[in-house]
Image (cartoon, rainbow, N blue to C red; front, side):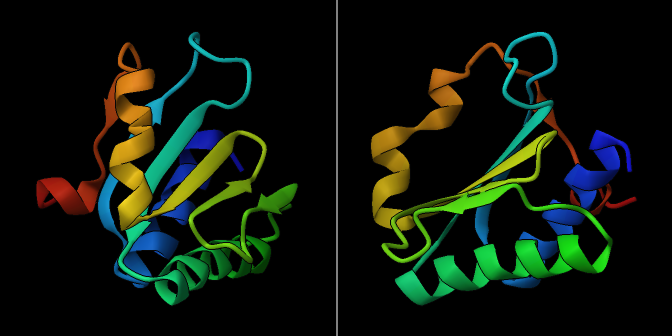
Length: 118
């Protein structure tokens, strides 16, 4: 699966669990870590964990390897590493503090078909 297709799987998963303020950054040529970062937040510990679990389940259902999940038990900032795509799921209280979009401000935003009404 290509990295942009994997990004769409991750977007579908976070959207399924009603994640808020979903942002995807194209990290190609900017970071060696991943091609894309997807950043979102949940409004409670349980929602953050549900979002992370949905990413893992949907990726595995589509035969994609989840390399690791970090921060799941604390549910303040959960990182789901799928190789070419890394999802950052924040608790809403932590999102503004870390503000990854500002940290990676030179990365272009990715739009999804469901956002543009296609």
